[in-house]
Amino acid sequence: MLTAGAAVLAALTPATAFAAEEPLQGYGRQQLRWQRCAADQPASLECTTVKVPLDYADPGGRTIGIAVSRIKAGSAAKRHGVLLMNPGGPGAPGLTMPAGMEPLLPAEVRERFDLVGFDPRGVGRSSPVNCGLTADEQVLQHPYSAATFGQDVARAGSVADKCWARAGDLLPHITTRNTARDLDAVRAALGQRTISYLGHSYGTYLGAVYTQMFPRRADRFVLDSALDPALVWRGVLRGATEAAELAFTRWTEWAAARDAAYGLGATPEAVRAAFWDLIGHADRTPIPLEGQLFDGDAIRAQYPAFVEVEAVTPFIVALKAAAAGTPAGPSADVPAAAEAPDVDNVVSAAWAVLCGDVRSWPRDPEQYRRDAIRDRAASPLAGDLGAGIQPCAFWKSAPREAVTVVNNDVDALIVQNQWDPQTPLAMAKGMRRALHGARMVTVAGGEGHGVLVTGRPSCADGDVTRYLTTGRLPAKDRTCS
Image 1 (cartoon, one colour):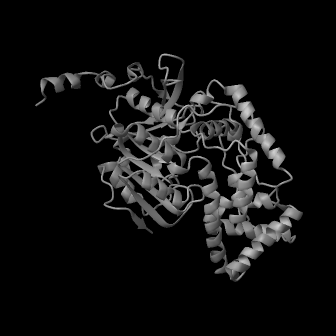
Image 2 (cartoon, rainbow, N blue to C red; image 1 turned 120 degrees about the vertical axis):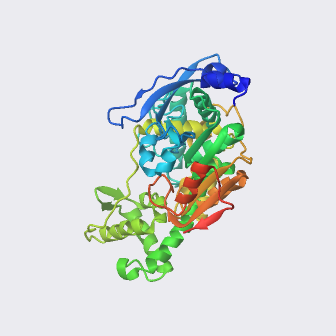
Image 3 (cartoon, helix red, strand yellow; image 1 turned 90 degrees about the horizontal axis):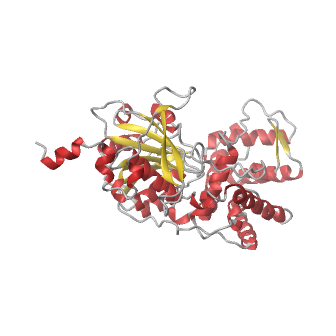
């Protein structure tokens, strides 16, 4: 039987019931108007806009809209709550993520959760930042050479100048901490005491920051392909290229064991030598393949591909054949850049977060030069790409808040491929150290950036389903294959 107090609480609308607990009460009492997101999206995907302060230090000042989407839970009787989602980035839009993830999640998860996506502030439909960058300025990583370093410095400065000239009113407020605050505002506007969460790549850091800032409101958090909070942000870029060297070594061993099929060398040393001979040839004479010209730097820029040995090997074989003037054959699969709805917005928002989150970016261009030379010597495949000078060296203002130090006991489940090109296993272990209440499932031999989001069956699937449907984490960290 309900007590009198409980009966009154049950009679209130969710927003009213929780208003007394909300630090920004007015934002928790919004009346949301849902409508179909777009004609080319499923009818079940509804969209709305949640108003939030541009500056959380001034909640009565200017507001911005956060575009939010949802697909309702499949069963009203079994519904547990909302599962917010972030696809990564920073800078990636997430409004259509519920429609993309719905067929990848098991039925018992879909029936328990409203799947909720959103465009983070500065992205997509949420007060987008656009710096007006050229195609060259939209490339995040550039190889180091003494001859072009002056151009690299000028490019980085130009990106920073353009961003501040066109979006200086927004940039100080586009940070991970503020996006985490937006998540909590969305939670309140949806009338939820807590949220569950699925974050991929950068989304794992966003989720971890949320657990640090709002630990009592974090329910079931799944972090797919995690980065190390201690490395944000320059350390993440350098760590990915350092890990690429391990993946490259593994690839040379794999290719050598299949020399009869690919002809790249019978030993890892021979495969390595053949690859660097190819780089040298491409530096002298760029290699035409599938309508593109590849110089040595362009080949090295494909370093993330080496984690997927069966996919990258035909590409290298085709380059070798093209360099020798032999037709590449049908197996040539040229890596292509991922399509983005608005590349300028994605890259502009990425720099807003990467530069706006932390104060640790060096300001002296010579520091970047020294680091690029040192990292290239230690990791020849791509070390200079991760250490090169970036717009953050010239960002116009320092971050208003210090980076969040993630260190808590909130429950979370981290799932990680052993061979991930962008958030390597060592980074996921760093996230695990930061989240003491978490458990981590490592997919031994798993390749690629993403466990759940790729839709490929994984030995971690059962752990994720059990956690999301029951709240039970594995008893301890484990490795599966």
